[in-house]
Amino acid sequence: MATSEPRGPESEEGSNDSPTPVAASPEQYIKHPLQNRWALWYFKNDKSKSWTENLRLISKFDTVEDFWALYNHIQKPSKLGYGCDYCLFKDGIKPMWEDDRNKLGGRWLMTLSKQQRHNDLDCYWMETLLCLIGESFDEASEDVCGAVVNVRPKGDKISIWTGNCQNRDAIMTIGQQYKERLNLPVKNILGYQSHDDTSSKSGSTTKNMYSV
Ligand code: MGP
Image: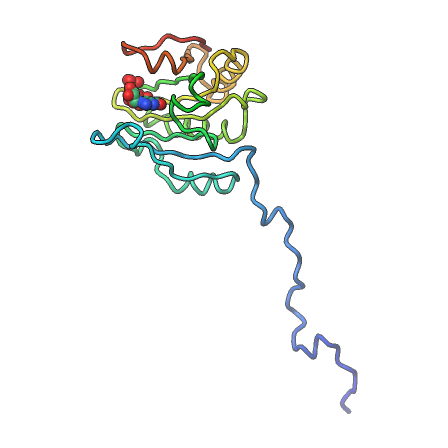
């Protein structure tokens, strides 16, 4: 004899095994915001154009996810041609001495040997980017304007630009923490030079205002 048990609504729908929808947690769909919005610039050395014309904005980002999407999409510095640069600057600051927020400032400069292009350049640059977007220098991070990598036949350079070369404490904090972060040997001296001195230099070197 057939039973006459009533059938539940799920049986009516014909399925009992589809998962109950669970609301996604915000962690799963909200990107992780950075403290600042950043702009990545690219400089291509075209001798027929002025220095400023050769500088191009690639893209801006203000989340961790958008940073990695951009970072993974573009060439590493070691793959760039000679004379090219990348610059990562806080949104609103142009990567040039003349910008109001750079003109009283200067840079911590790291000069690499030719061999370091293959061994160190890309990882030093990535670590520099992470120091910037992660605001790694405590309150001194406020003084950071941006960072630049120059790919040059004579040896590549990476620098961190800060806004005021008279802010000794902030500059020293940045220099010391940067050197530790890159795990540079103590004997490897980093120098800080004002943009004023760099832009008006006559010889091949600029005097250091500070060193770590
Ligand atoms: P560079 O690209 O910073 O270093 O400056 P590079 O090529 O290693 O040369 P070196 O002089 O340090 O040995 C090269 C040239 O680009 C400078 O001499 C300027 O003519 C020009 N230049 C560089 N920067 C960062 C600026 C800038 O901020 N503003 C202007 N107007 N010109 C710049």
